[in-house]
Image 1 (tube, one colour):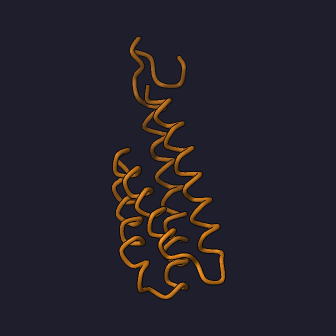
Image 2 (cartoon, rainbow, N blue to C red):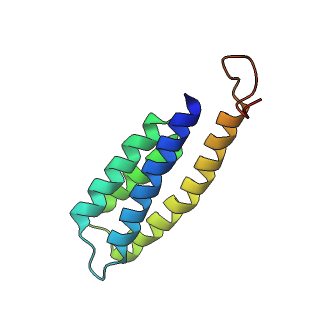
Length: 108
């Protein structure tokens, strides 16, 4: 089950990250789209117990209407770094969790 959650989380975050990167790459990003994507990322992150990532995504969502585009891009870059760290930590938790038969999550 945890491995399925990990795959779902990684797929979802990868898609949101691509969409946010694309939206923020525009010379004049659609702020509504950026806010919606950040909101989705925040919700999914918190649901998967990635509170710091969710918090940063919420902060991006909150500042999207008024912050300079350069600030939005900087915040997204920080989210990208934290997402990589958060996913690595989540993978480690999944790998070290016991399976129903008592073995570790490494298929052993």
